[in-house]
Length: 92
Image (cartoon, rainbow, N blue to C red; front, side):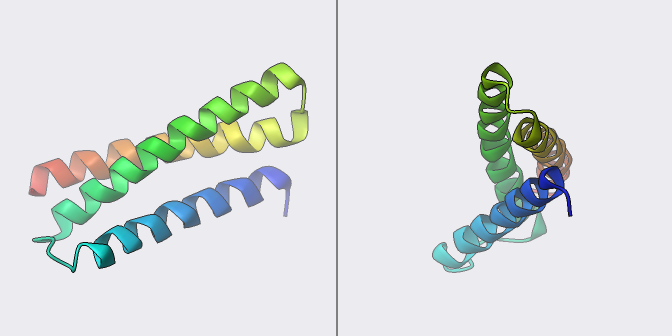
C-alpha cells in the first residue's frame, strides 16, 4: 500500500472513531441519523482543514511522498464533510 493511501485510510478511520466517541459521550441522545451525519461532517471538516494545512507545510518543505497523502486526505475529508453535512441538514 502506498503512503498516500495509508494516510487517507488512517485519517478517515480517525474521523469515524471520533464521531463514534462523540455519540457515546453524548449518551446517545442524538435524535436520528441526521444529527449523526452532521457530527461526522463537522469532524471531517475540522480534520480536512488540518490535513490541508499539513499538506501545504509539506509542500513548502519539499516532502513529496507525504505531501500527496495529506493533500488527498484533506480533499477527501472535505468532500465527505460536504456530503454528510448536506444530508444531515436535510434530515435534522
